[in-house]
Image (cartoon, rainbow, N blue to C red; front, top):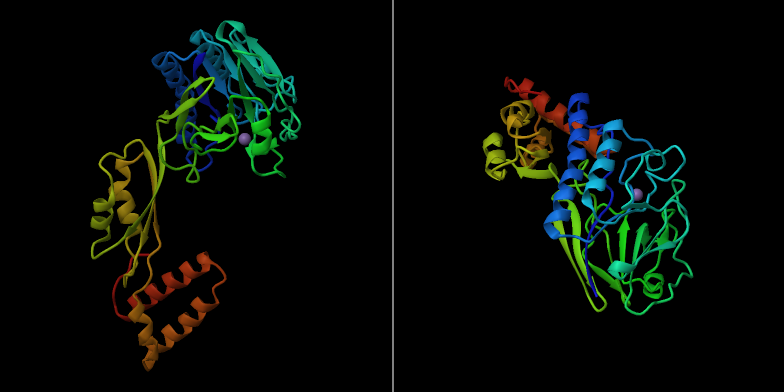
Length: 364
Ligand SMILES: [Mn+2]
């Protein structure tokens, strides 16, 4: 007995993409729908026999018409059983797309907040799952144990958290997974690929979201391609995302633009970058200049100034005269700053003040 599967979660289709302009946000939502096409390609490439979608497939309990149509069409075209376990964002209710859309027969949506099995005799598999019917979910695995049937693999599809007993999102303990009788738990909710884990005889994993939507979801994202037998489980991460969010800190030298260029990988056209300039320099780096020189190389770029004035600058606050007095006062301000934002404001003021006193023209 052996089964090849794909496991995805947290697509969050139709996310608002608040950080982007209206036009780019709409483009990103269109691109999100392409994740479904690439998912279909992976099903064919891996010759997968089952597909698990473990919740938060949609960002809310609504969806754009195009998204619903595409979801229905792509899943119908797969020709393999698909299991959807709604999560805390796309919880099941009478008016949600899961209820309104006419899904093909190969698509099974768990619509009740308790575990129930679906038997697939021809594959030798039982798929267990539950759907959120609210934006939270009680611990459904507590006290649960499937009665094992010889020659049958048990797989769980569920949106939830492990090791956080007070979580409002279907918390479960490793001991509960171990006792559940499941051979594999296809989980959702955690947005980072977990790697393949094991609790007793139960393997479990989160694929993470298939594509980042903000700087808290950086790097390559994707789904899981797995193979399960009675004795073992193999699970590989498969990249699926079109765009990547990346954070990059660059220690600037004499020429900040040169420093940034030297730190960049070759091709960043599909990426959304936040570059923070760090290090010490006398004058504020020309953030706007760097931004406009480089933004054409990215889908979206933000440059931030995180540099500090040179340390020996503060030594000059011992000087007599206007500059010393100014630096003493600003130093006190810096010490009293309540947060990073206030610190940055003081640093900006120090640089502008010194530039004015020294007759330099400093860009702000
Ligand atoms: Mn979730």
